[in-house]
Image (cartoon, rainbow, N blue to C red; front, side, top):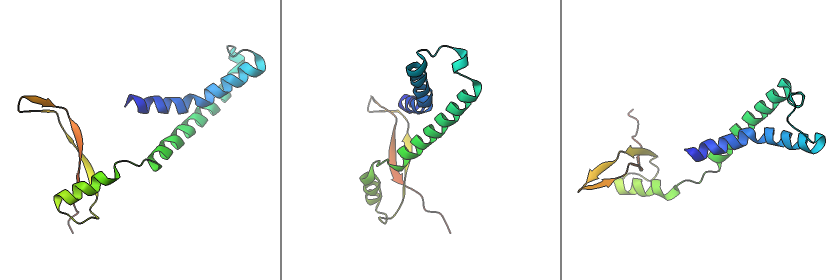
Length: 114
């Protein structure tokens, strides 16, 4: 989860960093309030939000994920191969005196009733 927050913050703050680098390269300073008008900050925030959403969509689109894990779970359950999967959280538990951490398992998704 912290990795997701860091990536989102990075993509949101990227336009501010580029603008700050441009100010530093052209004016030699970036500490003056006149260099950061509200309109410019608004455009940078909108651009950062758009960039962050685009990055999230790109990460979702290009995510390969565990491709064979779903097929293995469906085959183990003896269901048809085109059955979709979903992940289920299994909470932490004590098994034979050993603590087993909580984790997610892929299980076949229930089929809707007609």
